[in-house]
Amino acid sequence: MTDKKQHILEHALELFAEKGFEGTSIRDLAARADVNVAMVNYYFGSKEKLFEQLVAHKAAYARVALEELANNPNYSEIEKVDMIIDNHIKKLFGNRKFHRVLHQELMLSQREALQAAIVEIIYPNSLIMRGVIESGMKSGLFKKVDAPLVIATITGTINQVLLSRRMCNKLLNKDEAYVPYDDTRFAKRLADHLKQMIRAHLLK
Image (tube, rainbow, N blue to C red):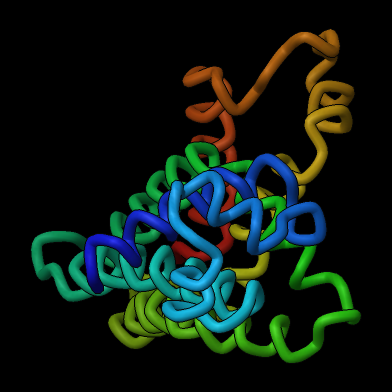
């Protein structure tokens, strides 16, 4: 990837996080990155294609880390699941605004081609997680479980916390000024809860 293309993607990430997909235009992106509109169109062709490449860039980075963890013989499968939970929370809390935009696109039906592209981009990462769980079942460490739904339980719990700060604060009995995603104690609380729940479900 060229430095200029990377530069545009970095600024696009900020802008999509701030204004959402609908609220961001190619002109906005060009202005934020201090390049002309023609350059954005040259590299990406459209706002949808730019968004796809941004998701692909983030997913590829996560995939490398997941593959390294999944293939590491120094950790048991349950240790790998614990680390996947920790890393997922850290990643999503750190990019929570963009994650909300991404999730909105996954839930909407008005841009079905973009939605389908996003699913195809992020799906391989879930397959790595599934492989870890299936490896644990094969080795006898884990009970026979529904691996895809274990993944949905982990990601769904984190998503629920992320998608509505107001609801999260209500559940936690916190005031409106509280930002749970900036609180390392809450991140640990969420991780510990998920690990305890998933361990009880997986381990014999």
